[in-house]
Image 1 (cartoon, rainbow, N blue to C red):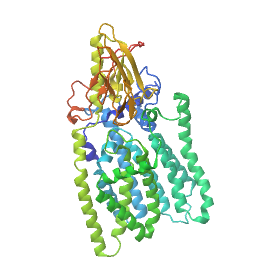
Image 2 (cartoon, helix red, strand yellow):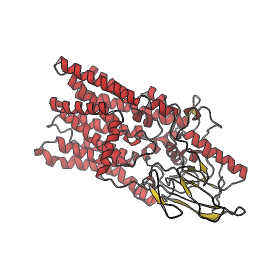
Image 3 (cartoon, rainbow, N blue to C red):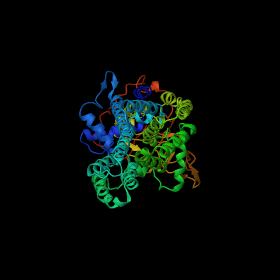
Image 4 (cartoon, one colour):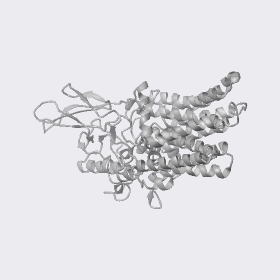
Length: 536
């Protein structure tokens, strides 16, 4: 897993820079602001991940310089991700010890499952992207393994209904909710598993442990919600407002096919067949399978109801892969030990062939992502942060603002006040630059940057957009004839000036050969800021 993650090089996605900027502000005592002097806005959706980064900065491990010549803003998040991946493998081993009889067999199955997981590009890419995906996957996997180990004690055991089990499960769910907003769906894991596994005559005994679970899960979450309401005046994160997350509908479940087709339909259908066969042939696997399949099903539902992400590679499906790999590995290990040589040969041969086909589908994805990284943090920090600092110095702008969609790297380096066209770090999900005629040129500039899937243009006609998550910004066409300007969707805008998108750049440009050093430290900002925005 570490080798696969190292193939991505120094790439950190620009969205991770938003969490980095908030972690810096928290560590420096400025509170929830994206940069010094900005208004408090919850522009992050991962409070626990921001907290881990802030702790690293307080300890001098993050945002202070370099480790052995490598920037710590690259190595520290990747080190955290590696620790989370090791934690996932430890959870695999704990589940194998509970289901399988031998420690050697458990170790072998863990090694096979970990190797399989390392060849899932969607898991590797987003685990080592600098985002919270690895920590989120660790929390969900830990919750599932906790339920597997307690479920293996048998239907007459009280371990599943113990207060300690309910409290630990609730705390894990609370951390998951505070790591990603869609973690709220895992509030149904413990009650669902308990109702499916507890005997009918003991159904009254379920009420008390479920109450302990709810108290442990909703307590920390409720405290944070109250703080959010008092600090920001909202019950949901500003990112959810900016992304215009729609209410779920039954048709959203059709997106399960995206997950099934990602490694190839052959390996997906074979894995489903292995799970069904183990549930029918091996009675001892029914209880651990329930404990694994309930969180797996909820992880799939969580992926389906979220808006499609513009960065690709199924970014929101990270918890799905460790749960699916663990369930398939456990069922395969129990089926292989059954008597019958032909059955063993057929099962192993089928799995080997399916894995070979899946490898042919997924093997080019990781090198392609390394060669064409998505929105590298350091490129944004240089081109949007430091470069516009130099433009402002040349133009003599001391108190200005910068309008652009790429916020992460810019927030770490820019001395200008940021205006986020994506709406993540602003209180409004829509930023409107009113029409204005600049003195001396007679040119009218107008733009209305929105994250909605469609909007009305200046002429009143309806224009279709690629989608709310894929909108980068809108560029502006000027008019000297007095007519209203035309909006052009698709091009990234910086201070109402069109520019190319950076979603496909060489990885060699990120962290190795830069136009100028990427120090990720903003220049000094004047104490006061003017009311009008002066941009490049």
